[in-house]
Length: 93
Image (tube, helix red, strand yellow):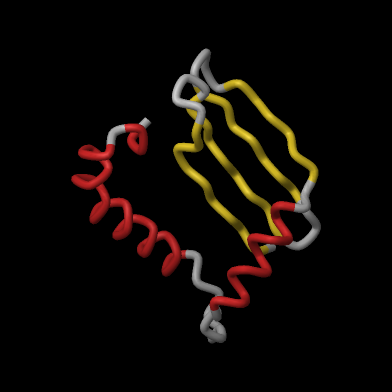
């Protein structure tokens, strides 16, 4: 996993951002969107935290947890050996 190695993540960060940007442009809906505010982000994160949580073991050491709420979702990968999350992703539906 790329994100479990800080040095590798730093090296790959520019490519990851570029790839995400290209993907977002390719999927573009053609419309204009209002810029998200800090409050919008807080609401999305709070909504996702309320979602029903499901866990799945990816490997002996790694678990994925998904909180799925009607308006938002949170995806989290955890390193069970270190006892902390490795990656979190919030999606506003």
